[in-house]
Image 1 (cartoon, rainbow, N blue to C red):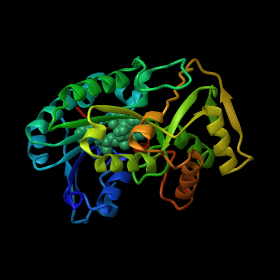
Image 2: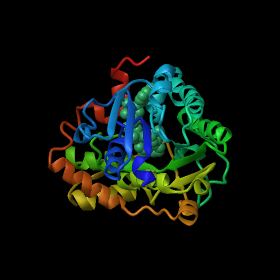
Image 3: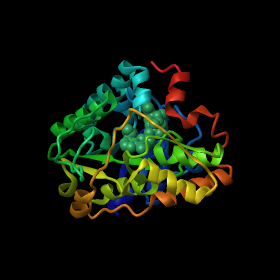
Image 4: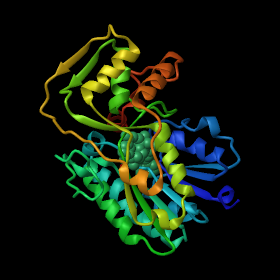
Length: 333
Ligand SMILES: NC(=O)c1ccc[n+]([C@@H]2O[C@H](COP(=O)([O-])OP(=O)(O)OC[C@H]3O[C@@H](n4cnc5c(N)ncnc54)[C@H](O)[C@@H]3O)[C@@H](O)[C@H]2O)c1
């Protein structure tokens, strides 16, 4: 019964992951408040906008007064809001830091004062940098290669230091997410390659040997839901990788080709960017009993269907599908 009353506050709830997570939370009976700048579209949560348990607040997580007011009475924070990839971050590093790091320190301070009981932070598997190890486990040192990843790692540290008996904290290091969301991103590996195959009739792979860890967006959202239901002691001050399949880029391209159409050519272009990521999701499976269930092939099929049904209109020209293009076009200060 207590879960039905549980109040969840999601920053960045109108983003790619949030747009799948929010309806799932409402479905399970949670009361949900989203705070977001709606950078990628105002109508992202339209399918649930009249739900009696949903409140949407258009606002900036850097606004201290707003957060003090809006987080009052909430049990749990899921923190997704972020300038959420390297190229967007690098457009304006000072802006990126103000949102991804400074605002997080402030958020932690505010929600602790407001008596929030739990904060779950979306970090990233990119915090490891490039590793030689076959299995990249949570105990390996962090060697982030970019500022986006560096501040993800630093936020984890801030959070772990802030945890207390009455303030349960956990961080998740997701793989690259794939699949369809009502707020679509076409700047993530599987999604890019699928869109190219369908909308350009050609797949371009830079390199190909690099490994990429992947997680289906349904699994990503289901994990946040799952974490809400776990007892404090299971997750407190814990950090977990989460992913399903690690694949070489050329293998992902091959999967896209076999699903979208064998006649679609794969063009390979050599690159100096040989960054290769692969992670182990063993700890989350063994300690928390969470295993991702949906495959990369399912994500490709879901995307193919969404394109066919016209759910992703103007995929090559609408800048909202590409974070860096949107950030270039808007004047966020
Ligand atoms: N998508 C992935 O592959 C992936 C992988 C690893 C980690 N993550 C992390 O998961 C989280 C969610 O990712 P996503 O793909 O949904 O990103 P997204 O870019 O689609 O969503 C981020 C949301 O935050 C909002 N936002 C940005 N700055 C804000 C501000 N100052 N105030 C209020 N709202 C603001 C944006 O409007 C957007 O709706 C991010 O923290 C990201 O770093 C994502």
